[in-house]
Length: 488
Ligand code: ADP
Ligand code: GLC
Image (cartoon, rainbow, N blue to C red; front, side):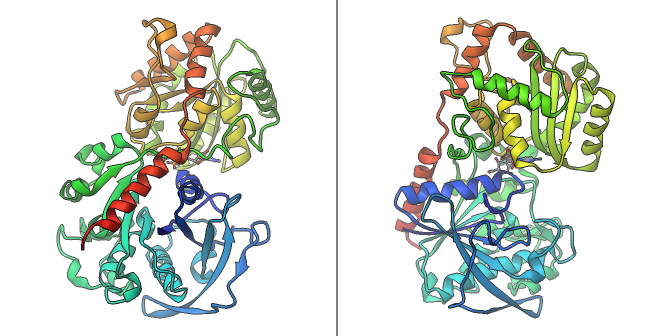
């Protein structure tokens, strides 16, 4: 089975969030199950050619691609996902992808991903590599299913190709003006009120993907149900209700080659569920790094996040005066919206003995904070899957989360009333989206922390749960098979 896996980011090459983790890991798991997978991403200027041994496909040379009436030159580069035979193809077009950030608010953001989508299809054609499935991810790849169904419908190479579209976040819809359809060489007949590509007077790449893909998946079961409601569907719930028989929720997995405290490349001290002493050493190391004092009796609460409304920082802010009085220390690694970056900067300035922060994107620190913290906070307004809480579970770092999406599917609330031995709880969770509910959950965690035996039980419950990709990758393979055997 041949799978073209198309994404706007993938580890270890380029990462802004969990999509990169998934795109670097799932294709390897699919290959282990016997699929022939090729991954396609744009060649951003931040990708280090030498470090990752990118090879220019001289044999292919230059490909001309038309976007917005201009012809752009695309070249292909190739490498492999680490420790695998999975080929990754980089779509190179410096005009569009040599920018300061991966995603931009530039006027031609639509053109960047039109070029990418067309580039992927042309790369497949030029190699005459007929994929059984094109697996698209998020709005940046949303036009591909329509291209395959319309612009390329007479190309025999794609006569058997099916498309699968994975929603990693329905809040990002790639909305542009109607004129983008022309730029993309798409037939404007698709654009009409509430039709296949239109939402609130815009042309949405995401909606296009949802409408035209043969199958839609999202990254947890709970989220697959939530997005059918106005509260979580961001205006796309009606399309999803129409397509509900083709919508599946498959929980993301973890690549334990990168995220296992027993072998994590970035950790000064390794540890496992049988031998946790290394965790305490990492805590000391981390606190020291941030100039905070180490005290075994004070829990350290970690946050690693994009700083956006999605992640629940407004309710965090609401209850801040109470949170800061608690006997705990805080370390935040994050970047994003200015209002939250400023919030964490000022917290650090005002409470230097309790709070430390790194405002920016730092992969090494993200691993250290997972390992060195006692608790991990993720109070998301919505969370399609969430990977950081799953990493926390493996690192014995007890998650405190809002019960939504993938957080609800991975974190089981610890029940203080139940007999300890029989409780499978691995964290603390709350449902109400309010500062008070967040505060009470954190407080439950802090109050439980001194009871070392109980705490250890909660940690063990998390550390011993297996979230590796094998199971979820198997579910994708079964969906691919189902698609391939379906008529039309
Ligand atoms: P999302 O994709 O919504 O941002 P996830 O929990 O699925 O949320 O994935 C986030 C990924 O990005 C994790 O691997 C996390 O460690 C990483 N990450 C988030 N913020 C930072 C940061 N500031 N520095 C380094 N890594 C980060
Ligand atoms: C998105 C979601 C996150 C999910 C990630 C990978 O960025 O916000 O919940 O874990 O994609 O699927």
